[in-house]
Length: 75
Image 1: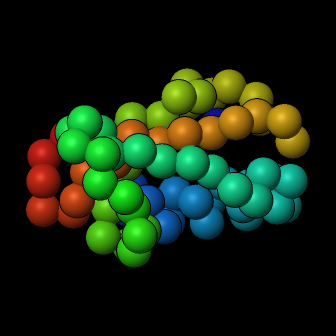
Image 2: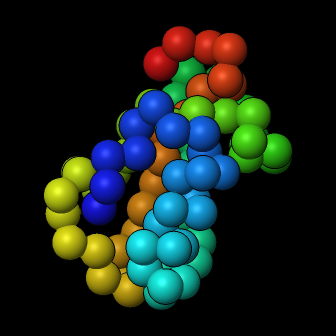
Image 3: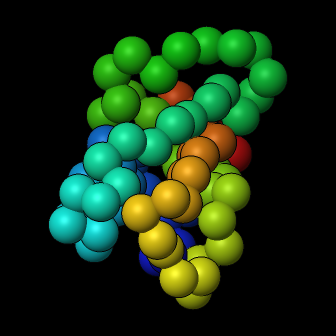
């Protein structure tokens, strides 16, 4: 698992798909502020946290979730 904290959410999702040759085609995300906002346009969000630590080996069954905030917000 790469360290994707600080990445644009869309770029992070693309990186996982590319790295796993689409074995992990879907990741999930949530609003890190707790406000419950939906990440409709992924390019408008940045990754503040990831549930899988950087360096961990990914398998097709790994569930990846990113904590995100809007681009103009601080983590």
